[in-house]
Amino acid sequence: MRRSLLVLLGGLFLLAGCGGGNPQVTWSVSGQEVTVGPSQFCDVRLRDCTNDDQARAVLPVPAGTAVEVSVPSEVSEAPWSLVFAYVDATGQQTTGRSPVFAPNAQESYTLTLPEPGDVLQTAQVQLLGAAPVANPDTGEIDYPARATWVLVAQP
Image (tube, rainbow, N blue to C red; front, side):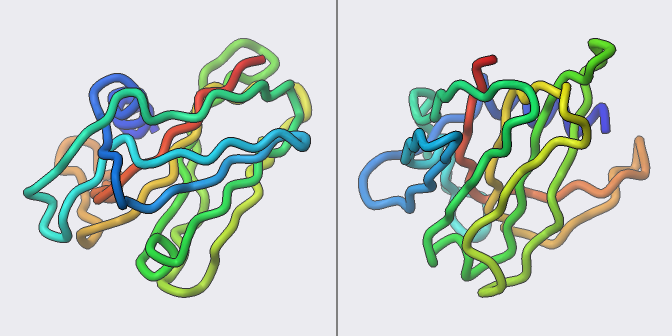
């Protein structure tokens, strides 16, 4: 999980995406909605990437509030998932991941944190590009992301 957090946080600060015709993702919280382009977008071989460090949604997400994410068909046609970081009631920072959605299986997801007092910090839709691989240092599975769309949560 520690590596996943580093990947997520690194994505927030180092990754950036492209504008133009790239797919957009919509984040919704308590009736507020923001649609953004990717913060990073790569070709299918993960070699040609463009970045946009301004491409992020910022929404208030009070503790215990669900977050809805909707992805377009350009995303849902491939495997994708949601990675997120939150702080629990004891102040411990934790990361999590939704299931990996199979191609053409799902165009939306509702993120609900485990406990009502948990506070979301960030969430990231990841369009998966290559097959998952085991990290030789940790044994955890890494999911190479071809593109990312970021939500920064405000309490």
